[in-house]
Amino acid sequence: MEEKRILLTVSYDGTAYCGWQFQENGPSIQAEIEKALEKAVGTFIRVTGASRTDAGVHALGQRCHFDTVSGIPAEKYPFVLNRYLPPDIRVTESMRVPPDFHARFDAAGKWYTYRIHNAPHPSALYRHLTAHVPVHLDEKKMDDCAKRLLGAHDFAAFAAAVGQAKTTVRTIDAVSVTRNGTEITFKIHGNGFLYNMVRIIAGTLIYVGQGKLEGDCISRAIDSGNRLDLGVTAPACGLELTRVEYAFEQEEEKP
Image (cartoon, rainbow, N blue to C red; front, top):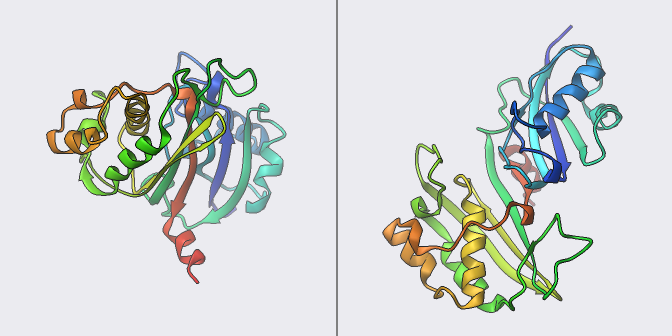
């Protein structure tokens, strides 16, 4: 039978997992999807993800691809795989893509969302989906500071020490910080992100909102390349990989 390459869109609550990528020391999202695929088609299939989200990080629109000779129609994989997946992982969409397509290397852009529960007491309902900050945050100062990220910059200061990126230059083309009651939402879009970059930015914005850092700290860190100019890395529980975009989808969205 003809081999086909399938692209999946996956959402998950990452609380119970050691991250996207397979690891020996704990359950991963990748391993759960591979187990479900093996049950569905009868043979082991390796899955390649667009982003290696860390332990405790969530996703609304993670993407991954795999190759198969199965006769399952490309668009039917959500119905098939969700029968075998745990309830905190769901395949929401699937499609056939060209054989040379790569979920990670062909990504044209990514949206991330970071959520903060800004109230004296933690949320009972959303404790796994938000980072709790009991001290009042000034979301206007946070938003003004975030705007300094816009454009193409060397974000060396925003990378965790264990990062292995070939270049630390990235382009950020949309950022916002908004408040709705006790929830503050930070959204960011760019052509790529360094390891822990979004959580470092979120932690920095929290410090700005608390008055622990000045609003120009983002600009200073870009110029200096010094991680010490920024705030702490924010907790993983507040982070969501919202969407991974590809060129063929961006073309479809043009008027």
